[in-house]
Length: 189
Image (cartoon, rainbow, N blue to C red):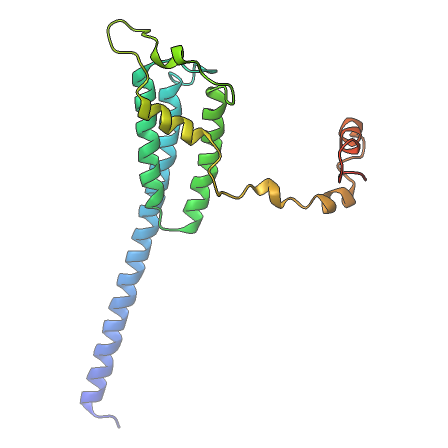
């Protein structure tokens, strides 16, 4: 029969191990919840950036040359970047990047890219009661956000064209697409 000292040591060990497992479960649950809250706020920051730039989504191509709108949008984008960097899980980062791509496209279209905005757009004083020139850093932040990030892989580049073409389902009854693809090298059926 084991000695009482061994039994109490084993009991203490398992109690400590149980406490450690419980603490780990609480910590990881808290970390997941915290990352989810950060993700939610990051997405909200992107929505708010677009809303600010476009006066609640009512203006497009290009948005009003309103200094405050551009500053507010740029601030939300910068906060978004900080929040994104704090995400703790790959799943949250992936979801965040999907939202980012959606809002990047919206901002890109809003700026009427790739057309260039004129000097007058950035400097014109539209509101005499305040300085209306677009703040240069805000313009840089917003235009930078609207561009495809350098080094990011484009998912379209991974499309297996050969497999899609071999299935040949997409071209059935789609004569215009079939004729278009036949004009391009590498897309012949």
